[in-house]
Image 1 (cartoon, one colour):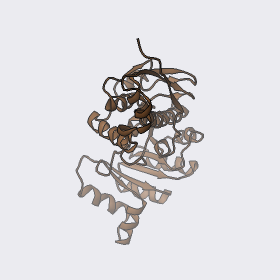
Image 2 (cartoon, one colour; image 1 turned 60 degrees about the vertical axis):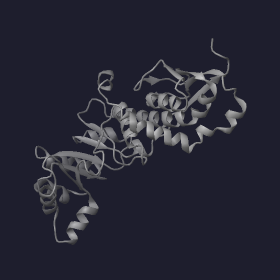
Image 3 (cartoon, one colour; image 1 turned 90 degrees about the horizontal axis):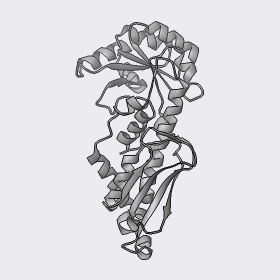
Image 4 (tube, rainbow, N blue to C red; image 1 turned 30 degrees about the horizontal axis):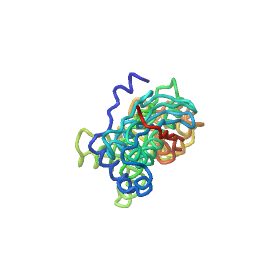
Amino acid sequence: MRDRLDEIPFPDPGQVYELVRAALVEDGAFRDVTTQSIVAPDQQGRGNLLAKESGVICGLTVVVTAFTAIDSEIELRTRAVDGDWVHAGTEFASVVGPLGPMLSAERVALNFLQRLSGIATATRAMVQAAGGLPVRILDTRKTTPGLRSLERYAVRVGGGYNHRFNLSDGILIKDNHIAAARSRGLGIAEAIRQARALSPHMLRVEVEVTDLDETREAVEGGADVILLDNMGVPVMAQAVEMARGRCLVEASGGVTVENVREIAETGVDFISSGSLTHSAKALDINLEVMTAELG
């Protein structure tokens, strides 16, 4: 896992800074009336980041960004890196520096860290459940608006892979596209040919199918990838056999940690799950601040 994590690029730092600063502004962190009325301007402090439950840590760079956006003198001292598993009760990093700015940035820093760590933890669980089988666990576009780059980074940290980043990244002919095509008298094969003719030649054409008839139509129509949407496992296995050697196969819909291995055993190449980003539980992390001045 560590070798692969070393190759995972962090999202553009400039974009991350703008996201974090917007969150700080939203939270009133630059006009924290409580802290400014109680904490002395020159008061120093230290805060320990404590995992209240076990999971995968993700988002430490965002934490640094949040604190230093308030005060550049705040320092994060880490005993873990993104991708590390920490057990409940572990203090995995410390924040040291001016106490007032530390308290003002605390909530935003934790919100990002808890959210991204939760996604990485959920992804790790699903990847491990399908461990040893030749399948990739993918995310989807079901992300928090504005946070897609960070949330999909968290998926990669958890051991998963990313589907197309946005609508311009790949052709995915879904059920509503197929309905629109059929209303014009076009079948799936014609929709594939039209998409390929009107799009950049480097893009794959993927088609969502819901039964074996649509699977056959998409495979024979020349799809590069077929997406088996909410199919039962026995039907899914038949669809995989139908596509074998002709196109790649992705399974999606209703994927859970409990059933992902059974789905993977059908021989699909990819399993995508929107739950990795839209339903991941935030990892419970606290910042326990000590107010003694630093020596």
